[in-house]
Image 1 (spheres, rainbow, N blue to C red):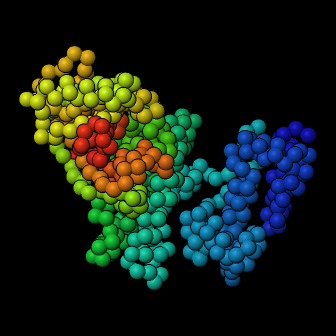
Image 2: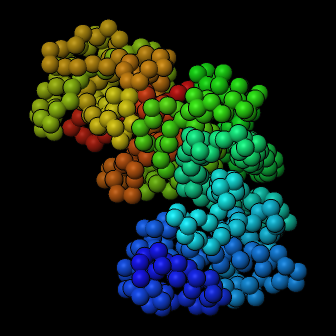
Image 3: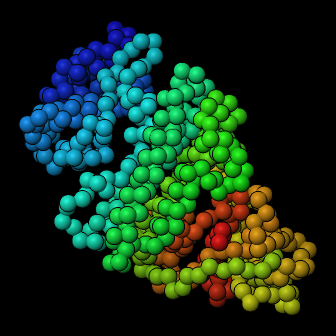
Length: 488
């Protein structure tokens, strides 16, 4: 039996036994293959595990059953092999975005049985997938529940964290769809306008309106991070066609005025931009309109859940002070090299800089400056330079290098960098402050960055991105302060 027949037979068996316990070994036997091989082939060909496929089909059918009159949640849960109503409700909510008690026809996802016809077909309809794959908030579903303001806010914070994990990949799928020429024939134009303008943009605006009203009602209790309103304002501007990036003003205005301009490949490329991956760190040659929407969506979510994250990350240490600085033009003078791991070599470097005292700033500390020369972290390697920030006209000693920092961003990638930054000082257990395990980089880096994101401050990544560890007591002691590039 070839693999097409094998998988077709397995899918047929699943469809006939969705209301029964389905054993993977039994499925493999139906296909005349071992369990491990069957699961591997299914995953490679279908793009999902056998468990995911069964769960998707059950959730799709369960929703249709619940739409029937006199249907009870507990009965449907048992029918589709869930031990408890609670476990069923959690799975149902994750899949459909609404709990079983709130199910409505317009909010139901339909996952069709897969079948073979040269290519794999079935699954979610594209027009629904691009819309429904976003992790939409369920504010309407929460109304009527007896919760404290803190509990209500925590619900929104929890939603934001989950949306941050899911939405980036959906924006990338949207980018792929916009760039797929086969999806932009004349007969599909009207449907595509519905998908993008009404299904995605209008629905985000509707969600933002609901969030704004809901959060405004909670604001008086003091639980709301005020930065979320600024993030919503920025997102709403982009959704209305008021592109913050001047390079996109014209093309976005064209599409909003006449959607048929999307038939031009060049227009679609500027709207789509490039995929940036789940974390937004992949190299981007063209940052398009959808990339900005993705960033704005992230900004709302960060403003909601990042303050709690930054607080939880402070284990055995604390932030003593946090401020934003706008410095005048200045120059970093120092150098990089493996030899600087030797403390004596490092001290000699700073003794040479001590001879330039007439050029020192009020901010006169030993620092380790880090950046990627304006490239993304997955493209440009990390560089670390030991040195000091000094006045803009500081002469550069032989064997040293320099980077200029200026007050305004010039729109080009790499040096000169911008002399705007967040500045945080820390105290507590030194090992905890420099811990790497469980952090994206290390504890001080993560906490500084996450405070910024929670306050709605933009990080100029990757073009002007830089950070620096600050050694307040000299390079032979632990660093206890951090600088992080910003756009203020």
